Length: 448
Image 1 (cartoon, rainbow, N blue to C red):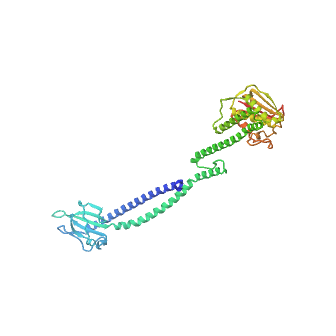
Image 2: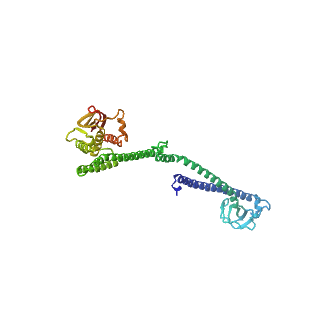
Image 3: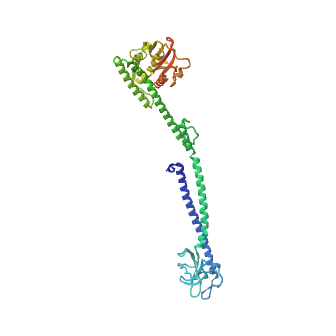
């Protein structure tokens, strides 16, 4: 069953069947050709014997046939049962002479022939027979004599059988050699497919990242499609893993708020309800991101000012022990084109980092209609704190997933990566630096 599923086995079986049919046909055609050649040679030989009988025959003045007693062209005609026989008829029925070899043998009945005609046939007694008609003129008329020469078919068979055996053996040897050659050619031809299978196993075992071998031109399209498929699946897997990490990170702040409200649930009932709703929104948002496959598009608006106020109200409870002073310079409403979940992620991570690293003060400001790098942006969000800031040269590092500015501070190291990715998706711009006013970190976000 397994062999039947093998492409090599199927090709080899098909080649074997084709070669078998071919060599059988070749054997039949060659044997038939040799038989016809042998029969043609026998006919010529029998024709010569008939002429010899005619030349040896003598006729009296009355056209009576006279044959010599001890002269025959073929010595086998003198030995009874030798397999070669001769008859001479006057007309169709009257036998006037027969060879000694035909003693006790029933004569072969000839067909009607015109003088000078001959016929070669294979009779029911397994003999090849030649009939030849000749005439002898006399005063009474022209009697027709028919010379019949026959030979047993075993002589032809004895000539053909050695050739058949030699031919079949030779064709069998050739067939075996050709099948062996075909087998090696198939192995050589299918080697690129086996190499692809080996490379796919290496990819599965994470020893390779893609199909990077040298493959035939006919397989380049297949290899390209497989590499594209592998890349897409890796991207999907990476996105699923990242979204799970983002989900865990997004749930961190609401859980911290709920933990702070657990001691006095009755006094913070509204806050608990808000955070539970926020948890539900985060889960829905992250599930939508995990299922998304196309390019980022949005026609929805979200109020940036309202989201900032809600996040600061929550963070004030999380970091109430630090007594953070928030200075806001934002309008009452600031609608921008962005998904609400994305905006919560961007602003929430930036403000959470500011609260985590600051000493006592965080400043948030919004400016409208800003221009940067020859581009017009609708909103510029600036978040500053009075913390230690980021050491020089580490700005690009903290944008990498899993990297934290200070390994001693609790966190997942993915917050700024999420911010950077989301701002890139909405075609915005993120910049970081040192706050001139507070001395700590300064983040600026340009929204399109």
